Length: 402
Ligand SMILES: Cc1cc2nc3c(=O)[nH]c(=O)nc-3n(C[C@H](O)[C@H](O)[C@H](O)COP(=O)(O)OP(=O)(O)OC[C@H]3O[C@@H](n4cnc5c(N)ncnc54)[C@H](O)[C@@H]3O)c2cc1C
Image (cartoon, rainbow, N blue to C red; front, side):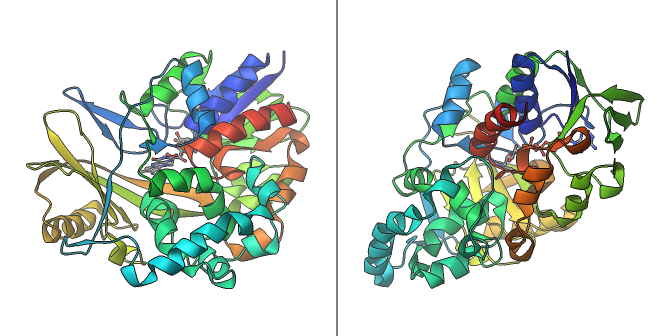
């Protein structure tokens, strides 16, 4: 039986490991933390679930996986509101652009038709030049600029970056027509009543060999792949990386040259206990720029429980004391009644590359080099980093390469 090592026990690593194990491989998952789940991270406080990471999903494939794992999806509507920094409600689409918005929204599926194959295929390959430019540029060159306020809330406020910088392919992969409709029509999104960690815990239950608190320090590719960790060394037939590691830690594999190209977004979540319930998901579009620490989105973390919690999300690699200072100010200014900070987490979110690297066929090169000397990239290194896309890609990856 072939031995495969997986680096990272986040959603992608666990799911890839699960599919490999189902196919008969002997899988070992290495996790540098003392817990599994990565960005699926639900804190439980007196029975209330506080999500420090992932909150919702949208795809049928994710629902199918949840069925397979016997996980029930919640029936939660996510009513949205848009507010100024002073908390004054504003429409998502300005009334003087609504007619243009409607006609552009109507045209969108026709424009996307020519990219149907690349948008439908799992992962990120064969990306045409017009989807390598920023999403904003793509919109302007297709006279779709009035759709930007539709895409920015579930993209920028969800930690995936700014639409004038992030290539169009990522936005269109994440927010396909079905998902964007969920956001327009306030349709039900998939939520996790027992926490997103239930997903990763249940996948982990199916895996035989997970090693905790073990940081992979060096991977040497070859006929036999040698993995050196903070604890020991072991030989495998292949290794699958689902997270970036320093390029100097990847020896004797062509894939190492790509490590340095990945960019991330620093994305922060601060969860407060509150005295008043927040009834909607509240977006602050004035902050969808580059300003570090400013609140992008406020979210009711505990809609069914007695205690009230509000989470605020922001960008920036600031110290928590500074982040809290700005978040306190913004919550107060918006009239949100928070009491004290309960939990917080700064994430390095969304591995991606920028337009120039993307247009040099970044993901196609990786695809070609997969498996050379036993080393593979998967998860967010080769597909869009959301539960929906990781679910789809992990299955495809195992079918394609193993
Ligand atoms: C605040 C927040 C909210 C989000 N909300 C949503 C949402 O609502 N819906 C959605 O679909 N997505 C959401 N996302 C994104 C989603 O959570 C991620 O795309 C997904 O969880 C990533 O899973 P992953 O396994 O690829 O990576 P990760 O979860 O980052 O897992 C990688 C794992 O690898 C481990 N690791 C790294 N280096 C090493 C090493 N050298 N040795 C051993 N282990 C290592 C890490 O410790 C980690 O456990 C959100 C993200 C954040 C930060």
